[in-house]
Structures are given as C-alpha cells and as structure tokens.
Image 1 (cartoon, rainbow, N blue to C red):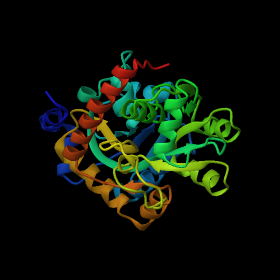
Image 2: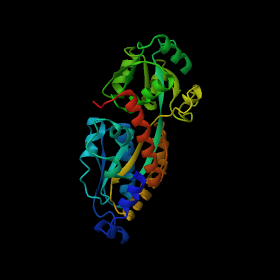
Image 3: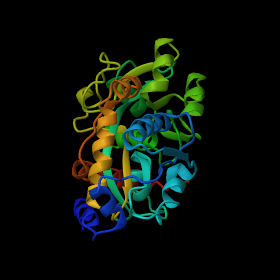
Length: 324
C-alpha cells in the first residue's frame, strides 16, 4: 500500500474521543506538542515556532515546541512512534527525516509510510553550489571540466554523511560523471567555515548561510539546485539549465502527525497550519530565509514524500551511502 492509501485509511479510523471532540468543535482540549528533531535556533526551529504561535492563537491552547535533536533527526521521530493518534503530537519533518534516513540501508526505528500521516509541506528552498575563490571555475561547465581533469582530488564538504547536502552533491556527481572526495562535518556551519578557510573546495550549501559569504567575496556561487531560479539569487542559473537536464534537489520542511489520526482532526490541523503559512509574518520570515512557501494538501504532501523516497533511495544505493 502506498503512502496516499495509508493516509486515507489512517484518517478513516472509527469514532474516537478526538473524533467526537472535533465534531463538537472542541479540538484541541489540551496543549499540543510540536516535536522539532533539531536544536533550537536553526531554520527548522524558526519555522516550527512561527507555526506553533499562530495555531496556538487559533486553537486557544498552547502549542509547545519540543526540541529533540540527535541522530540526524531520527531521535525526535523515534520517540513519537507510540504517541496516540489523536492530533496532539505533531512533528516538523524534513528531507532528512522523511526521505533520506528512511532510505538508508541502516534504517531508523520508524516507518514513514506506516507510522506518520502527512499534514502539509511547509516550504522548499534551493541549495547553492559554491566554491572557494581559489577554484578556477566560474560555471558548472568549468567546474565539471576541472573535476574531470583532476579526478579524485577536488574535495567537497557536507553537513554530514547522508545529509541533504551530501546527497545533492552525489546526485550531481552521478549526473556529471565526475569524482570528488567527500569531507563530512557535523553541520553546515562548520562545513561553511572550513570551505571559507580553503580546507575544502566545493560545497552544496543551504542558501541562507551561503549568501553573506558570497556577497563578501569569500565564496563564489556557481548555480542553484532547484528546477527554477531562486528569487533570493535570480542571477544564478540552475544546474539543470547549465547542461544537466532533470537535476533537481532542495531542502524542505513539512508537518506530519501520527498515522490513524481521525480525519476531522486532520482537517482542522491542516486548515489552521495553512492559514498560519499564509500570514504576512510567515511570508516575511520564511520567505526571508530564501524559502518558498508551499502549504499543499495532505494527499499532495504524501505524493511528494513518495517521490523523494524513490529519488534519494536510488542515489543512496548508487553511492553506497550508510548513515553515521
């Protein structure tokens, strides 16, 4: 059974207390927990706190952000698997927790397709391909030519083995037919510092931390990874238009809850989260991070997750990647 079917089946559970409560217009009756499987202060946490505040106001109940970092986000998801399917446990998911980790040979202790019900995709944002200024490449074509001339000598940084940044680079290597050496770090911050210092030469980075370094001339931007050019850096071409048709990778975040949550609860959660994402504050804060707000339906988000699982599982298998 695919994720879309599971979503429909999970939402059509028999009458429960939560189901009756929402029919009576009284959901939620107590605080809601929003688990963020990363530490406080990062992009995911900022988005979660904005949504939590907005839907808390709408619900008339606190929505408590619960940061549970560790194991590339797996810990936050693993602790929620046994939570009741009543709408009171939400999770901030991402490419890492909903697509990459579940595609690894050493899978986490949760099943995206069975344990969780998608609510909505919050946003997507591009990665930007950057190089140290010492690298003699001004374009994707020149970078590929350099890598082919020096196979196995160009080093590239990532925020960790199996991270979105790592897989975006492996997909590029596969498309371009080049060999570069992976140097993983514990997060994109340390990786960016080492790239600026010239300890590594190439990186697919998140756009927000990369922009100040690009503007200061400490890094050179080559291209973005999304299908369309980024509004944050419209002068940069995409990798697809640089000669590698079909290449696309992005960072993304979305809200899921526990599989089996009654459909009326799902509808209420979806409606209020989408309303929060359409607010001026969300457009300013999330858009200001270089992201594009999506706010799609549970079925659309379900299909998106399935596509991402299919795509990245192939990359992981080809590159023989295992999570740390």
